[in-house]
Length: 266
View 1 (tube, rainbow, N blue to C red):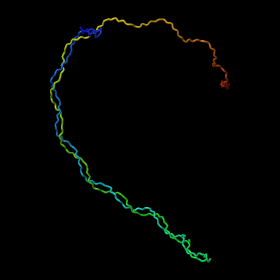
View 2: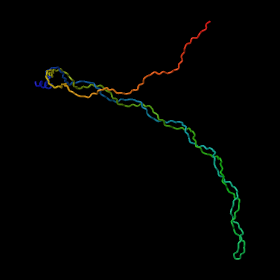
View 3: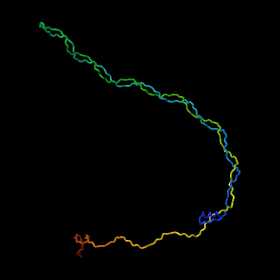
View 4: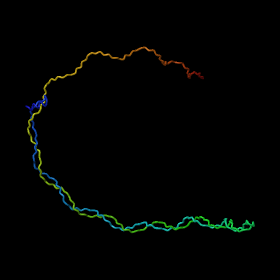
């Protein structure tokens, strides 16, 4: 009874406890010996033949053409300038010393006598001088011209190559072999049990509740407000309007009339 009272108190006034019976399933784990097949890796050495490329070097005799430096003598012409001395004769004034008789007065006796003195004298003489003359000539010279000439040479070269070779080696090979092993595992076993338990049952019962609500009440009230009113009154104003009128205008026009013409009959 205490359990029912606590359930009714927990679920509120609209719930009441009740007894219920229902079948249930219980699972138990049982240890069981089983057997399974597993793949076990096994490694062993196996002889394996393979072809490999072995590098080698062989010597070959080859012919090749090389350009050998050479010197060739050539005779060429080149312009040159030569200065040559040409003798020429011309007159030139030369100052020389010549003996000249000069009158000399003796201060004691007053006798005038002649004395011989060496005096400078200018005279023209023929002089031969060398005048440099520039001449442009073409001379022949032998020059060495560097050239190259082809030459056949026999050389021995080392040519890299490869050769195939069969190599036998032992390599590890891993294989998987099946093997049966026993193991213990837990197997779930399900059995049916009958359980009795109390569940809350919901029931409805009437109950009176009092509560307050807001009710609208209308009462008359006098209020004043200003409203716009339109009043009509007479106002004098002058209005200019355009009134259509008819005016006679002379317009020249041409009228074609039919005039009877007498016709002479025989």
